[in-house]
Length: 517
Length: 74
Image (tube, rainbow over all chains, first blue to last red):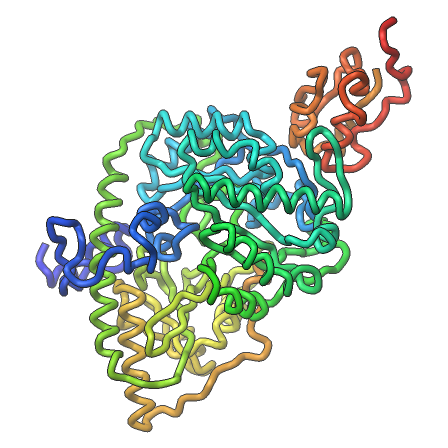
């Protein structure tokens, strides 16, 4: 393929092809030496992590923001039972269009789950991780959970395993987790103060007894923190999820952050409470509000100096399939899987992973090239920009097709992923095209520009009217490098007096995270 | 022989099934059912009936008043 031909290829090709196009465009200094390292910039630098940790997280979309552009996960819903009751959970409600934890459309046996894993792994080479996240608690269903992992280990050994638990039963199962090579465990820890816990958990079921109130929360908290310590001692990466509940644990989560960090947790994910009354949760029915996107960001910021914060969580269903932010679960119902002729072949997945590794090196090189140009600039200016992407770290989605925008904060220190804004509120229905555009613009009001692969004339005009620059000249190119290049031009224009920079703070900063609930 | 599950309230989560010391609980058409011949109200095993203690929906595992209370065999 000639270089010019590659430049002409539209963005509508397959994802792997797009990645390779962008890789070829940015040959720069991205040669791979015998050591497998780039000539400029170490691989470890990609995640700002030590090499041994990076090796563990680089293919896990939930543990690495960088990985979530390239890799997909799937949850298999083999664990329906739970051992605690949370005020933000109602297990009865299921809407196929709805995305939140604890929700599934069909529960699976371990054998069905293994078959589904092979079906998805065959169809989606990006799929790197199989998790059990419910819909109850994986460790309240240890037989089903571990049987599933055993089958996946046997049938598709290259796939990473992870599970997400409330932590109550964790200490009893750490040996099995280690034996089955489950590398990643997420614990939801919402408090370390039982008085606060009593407002979140009405009861727990522990050692054949139901406990309530402060006593229940105290047992739960002790077990959770013990679990973090035991995982750390075995070198299993532990992520902590916390549900931010305004007025109950919002300030307290800073203390939670310190407690889990000191026990060796690797990553902390503060998520907004989802509490729509129609879900029928205790909090929803009581009118407990969720935090605004701004409140979540502020809390993440205040914890960030102390440990890695996850900002790319999409609070997915316990049977989600695909890249974070997309759910292809409906393509893989048991009915459809039973009709599939599945021939699992590891090769396409290995090839995809090799291409991602190559793309990463090139992406990093491209970013560093742009960053080098930024080094001379000194400016306090920070701006937000929105990006329409289908994955691979590329600007490769049409404005009108985007279901969410990724948000980057640009400054002279580079481009930093700070969150995502869903633009198709679930379960609302009935929106015309006009109002969809309004929702999209409203979701990114605080951004100076939106990077897209393509955009129609009408939305372009509306965006400009709203003061958001539609940027389509970086179609199919890497997000980071393009955003930095654009930011350099912006700074130049400001310095030359062509543009006056105005701090853009949207007081009612769109409640985008919450509106998805 | 006494606990029963109110099927219309059962979420089908299976939590009770694995906790039952008498293996009296099984799934029937998406909901769980207690075999009244096998249920001992957990007498001799636990202080509280396990299905009641673990069920996520209150008042779903209840005493079946149509039947006499469990009597330990003499």
